[in-house]
Image (tube, rainbow, N blue to C red; front, side, top):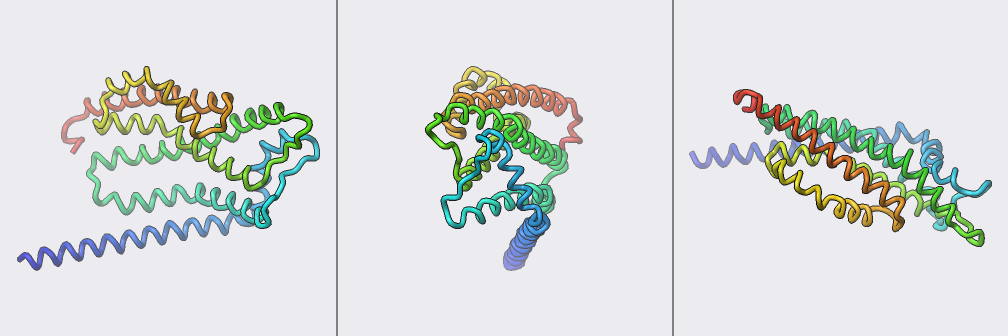
Length: 253
């Protein structure tokens, strides 16, 4: 009997590893397919990414290439980042297909809106960074550049900075999702989340100081959304918890 149980557990573990390998391969194939599909538009994507900075540069100025391979690595970084974003729904779907058999009905109802809202908030953070932050930040930096300095950033440094800012703002916009998740899973009570407001300003500016350049303008543009989104998260968590309490017990099973 013991041998049969161990054999079944071994088979189950093997099946899980095979399923995990299958999902990882599909995720990589999705990323590769998106990269191939976007490759004809590499120059267009590069121009779109460099547009906020180019609008702030003096007339006729161009980005510099200090490294020999920077003209190749720069557009390649953009291509992979865009391919990752494009394939993200497919990636999340594969992760969902791997995890869903182990989830309860209540958890499945909760995970689907959580995933959708996470994707939307991340996209909103990237859009806010591109259309609001970059337009203000690069103009601010260029206006403070002395006439004796030729303000023409290196292409590799610029693209690394842009991708870093995209990830930082995309992750920051996940604050409402994180607050709702913590409250709904009873990890942290709503009362404690509300009491944390008094420390939020300090924490928000500390995060902004770490993730953004050392100027007050970019720090404000990141800290203020954190504070606002935290309040939005508390409101959503309050509504969600009230709705959860009103549901019959059989719906939570």
